[in-house]
Amino acid sequence: MVSNTIKLSLGSLLVLLFFNCKNAEKRDKNVIKISTDTCRYYRYDAGQIISNLGCKNCHLSLNIEKIDDRGSTTFRGLAAMDSLKLIDYAFTKKHKGWYSKSGTLKSAKMDTLSKCEIKGVIRYIKDFGRDIPVAAQ
Amino acid sequence: MENSLINTLQMHFALLQNQPLTGGIVAKNLRITDNGSGELSLYGDFTITLKVLDLTTNGAPNLNSLMTFTQQVISNKLRGGGYKSGVIIHKYNSLQKKFDRTKTWTYSIRYNFNITVNVTQINMLSQLKGNDFVLAVVDSIGYQHTDQYGRRQSSAGLTQGDGGPATVSYSEWQKNKYFGVHEFFHTLGLDDIEDSSKKNRLMYHLGDNAGQIVSDTERGNMLNFLMTNIGDITQKNYANINLNTVTRLRTFLNNSTNGFKYNKAKFR
Ligand SMILES: [Zn+2]
Image 1 (tube, rainbow over the protein chains, first blue to last red):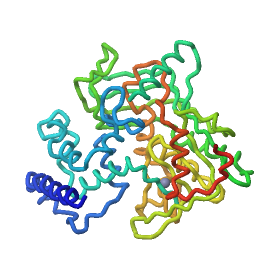
Image 2 (image 1 turned 30 degrees about the vertical axis):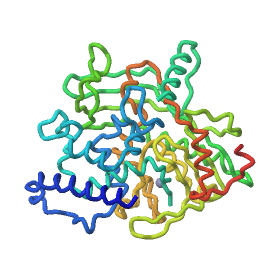
Image 3 (image 1 turned 135 degrees about the vertical axis):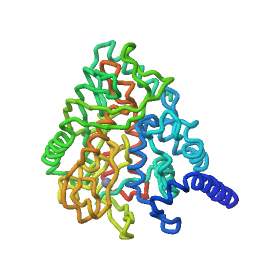
Image 4 (image 1 turned 90 degrees about the horizontal axis):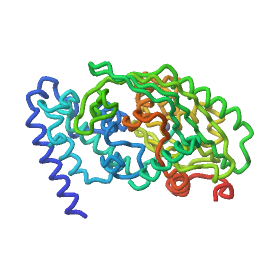
């Protein structure tokens, strides 16, 4: 358990460092808004990012199965995945390169997400599987 | 996977037999047009049904008027169509009238849906089907959460999110008639707002809420949710897939973390 957590954190760190280096130039211009120390999770903001990227258009959130009848991974299926695998597939490899600067889906601007935003997106996805109830007032 | 397959088969069977489709989302006369330069327009007549299950211990004498109010607000908030840009989906082939699963494309989508909303009371669990939307009315909810400002907040309603069962505390619902709509809009995929500059929004869920605005983006997201799998638009008629509603409601109500108080004799 402990070693898993360490592996996970080290892994995330490596992945995110790689991500950060690649986008360092762009980021400097915008001035880093949030440092890692002050990275806080706002469910709503993470949901907005997911909505803007359109994740749920392919990874359907209504479905109760992990894979839908078209063979695509549902949002629930994503939630059941390992965080590291999610980061790796979604952000590092950018869905086989579809979301890279020269990819077919480059307009989705996945490259502009900060480390903190990526962390938030992953947590939002993981929370979906845990069925954390949404509280009103 | 099997469930959605069975559900799809059942739906086709119902259509063949000329039986009426049932479920939370039933759509007829579906149609799609492609303007050839990246804009799709979707058309259809939708019926959205929310089933209200009264699980209160002492009954809910004002339930009818709360349900009527909820029906009116949902209708109003979903009215007027919607627009979403930058939607990445499979490429639509207008000649073959189907989505090409080997290609993806970025579209702008116009939603031109006529939406009829039903909010109906059910008295028995047998009236609840696997692909229905449900709002269970309970005595109280013990669940507390910490908001982004670090304050503890109690709950007037709880919902499992996208397609999931919704609940509302009867006494709280009487204090704020909009709680039923707020909870149901979680079922339609909207998230809570805690940003203090957005207190006038329906989805702002802290105690100092001061309005019921639903933004164009939120409406667009709900209309997008009604046609979750855009490929379904190429069928003439459609009903949403199995959501395991009865089992999920039971699990949700029995989860002690949520602290529901309700008349268990009404939910067997
Ligand atoms: Zn809420």
